[in-house]
Amino acid sequence: MTEHASDKAGQWMRGGGPDQDVVLSSRVRLARNLAGYPFVGRADTNQRRDLLERCRMSIARADITPGLHWVDLNDASSLDRKLLVERHLISRQHSKATSPRAVAISEDESIAVMINEEDHVRLQVLRTGMQLQDAYDQADVVDDVLERQLDFAFSSQLGYLTACPTNVGTGIRVSVMLHLPGLKLTGEIDKVRRAAKDMHLAVRGFYGEGTEAVGDLFQISNQTTLGKSEGQILFDFQDVVIPQIVEYERKARRALADHRATVLDDKVFRAWGTLSTARLLGSEEALYLLSYLRLGLCLDRIDSVSMQNVNELMLLIQSAHLQKIAARPLGGPERREFRARFVRERLGA
Amino acid sequence: MKCDSCDKPATVHLIEIKGGQKIEKHLCESCAVDEGVAVKASTPHISDLLEKFMIKHGALEPTQQTVRCEGCGMTQEEFRKSGLLGCPHCYDAFEEALAPLLGRAHEGASQHVGKVPSRAGIDEIRQRRLMQLRRELAEAVDAEQYERAANLRDQLSRVEAEDD
Image (cartoon, rainbow over all chains, first blue to last red; front, side, top):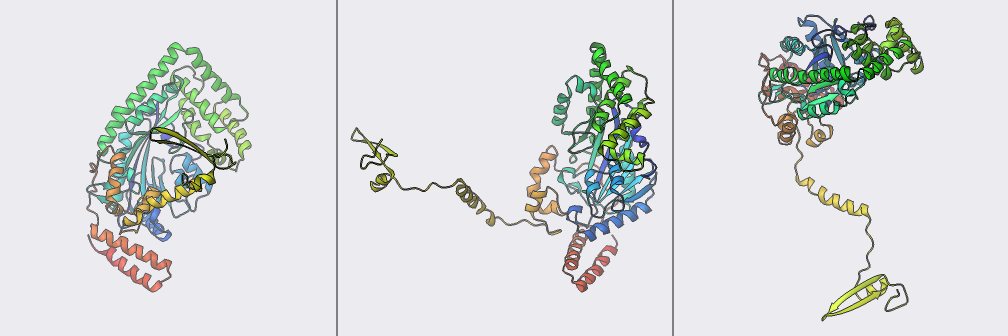
């Protein structure tokens, strides 16, 4: 599947969906472990192989719609693994490990089940725009189906038992990818970071844990997993916290359009100018410029490109994607040249 | 300034008040030692001080018992280093150390609220038994004790096959 899908984004990344001007995507992740086994970090190779086989059989037998495609990561090339990281289907840690591990992915890439990452099973559901409830509902169904085949480690006091105590309880991580150029330009982003921290939320960059925000893309997620039900965690997040940040961003954007229109247009059109004419383009620079282009589209300052096109480009300009599209390995300088040409073509410039 | 007793430079300066009278003494190091007002001290290295400090505090450790998980054999020290637990039973084994950590991570909560598996899983005793058998099996394979490993594998299949 990684072969034919590399030149287009998964449905969840193409954009659209509720609040898509600010919310790029929604994600729900559940962490589960099999009872009677040590956690992955403590399991030896034989046990990991055993765990992998059990999960593979259960997934194959399970009635999951859409069906899942099994990718043994020890058989996958490093480029394919990197592609999966760029598509947010596996973590960097999962990509780099060498022990028996896999991921099961649905054709539309909305479901991905990592096996033998930090926990035995990490099930995630992705949706475009603000659709956390929908994502959770599907994750819950898949979890139920898997649970019929696998005994998950569970205690009535601490809930689902996970390798890291920070995930114990519901084992749920809900997150949204937000595009916040308005708050960045008005210098209010640090206020959001502080407020998020006070509300026990984590703010991360585009590529998840340990990464900086590139292209004004921020991933916000819950950290508390014990003592609140999944429903409560979802409600706090999607009905209370995130709508406030979304409104805050919209207000910042309106203020820019109303009071600093020239500065705003300058950013948007310079971005368009560079993207449509550059001959060498680094991935961070491209993402940074695409962010302004996206802002310009949301505020109707520019109409030379579609939102879907920009959303897709944000994904496709990453290095593994470009090499898949080029169908050959590309070194740094060559990649920058290829990226610039690819972006020009996509923008019809 | 020269030493009061010899010609060497004075490095020890002493002010004594005796019967309301101030007596100043300026002595070199060796004369000061002779007069018993200074002890020839070798300057201790900071590393020695640190080492003593650490030994002193380290000396407290052996009196504490090493907490070890019966399920997977992980020690509390190993958990503290990696931040990751070894198996589900570690939650019981390290309960005391985990309590404050869980409180900080989860806004003071200590009780799960939320989804419960719809199907009662295998019971606690069987889970522990499976974990122990798997651990022994791994050790037997490591030690190339194949007969013991085969035996353990049989036991494992029997426990796995038991109906819930």
